[in-house]
Amino acid sequence: MKRKWDSSDERYFGIGIYRPKTVENVGSLWRTAYVLGASFVFLIDAKYKKKSSDVLKVWARIPLFQFETIEAFIQTVPYSCQLIGVEMDDSATPIQDFFHPDRAIYLLGSENNGLPKSLKSKCQELVILPGEPSLNVAAAGSIVVYDRILKKVNRSLLIQ
Ligand SMILES: C[S@@+](CC[C@H](N)C(=O)[O-])C[C@H]1O[C@@H](n2cnc3c(N)ncnc32)[C@H](O)[C@@H]1O
Image (cartoon, rainbow, N blue to C red):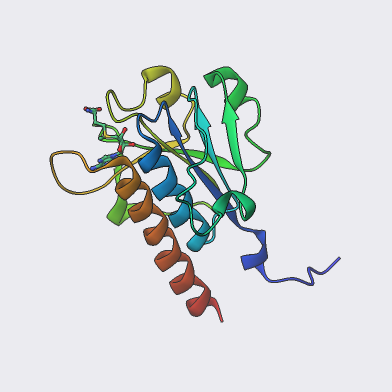
């Protein structure tokens, strides 16, 4: 059967943090994720309560899923969706050369220690942003999402 929809309809992404330390970073990433088109956000091993200062009420717009353990999170990764670790790692692909999968979950590490090996090993690919020292975790997530948007938009324009 011939497909009757655009391939851009077959894309989505989510983004989240492993063991975030501050509610401010979670709130900031959540807002960026909503504004830039994420389908969901998530936290692993965190205790997060929404802040009353959230003027956009992002909690009412895209869901925040909370997983108690890495195992519980991994079990929920959907079919045909790639897990992309965002980390300063020797094996990571520089963002300039990175091709974003249509369906992706971006995973950021904790402010203190980054992503543990056990989580990095579950990722299909790791991606690294330029510059040193490390960026703020919410800023790193925002840049990755912005890069995704730019590349996906350009690709759609090229295909048309
Ligand atoms: C503040 S950093 C963690 C730094 C931590 N002290 C370490 O050495 O691993 C928090 C998270 O932001 C993201 N991040 C920050 N800068 C990055 C960069 N240049 N490339 C990729 N991810 C980055 C990663 O997800 C990282 O785990």
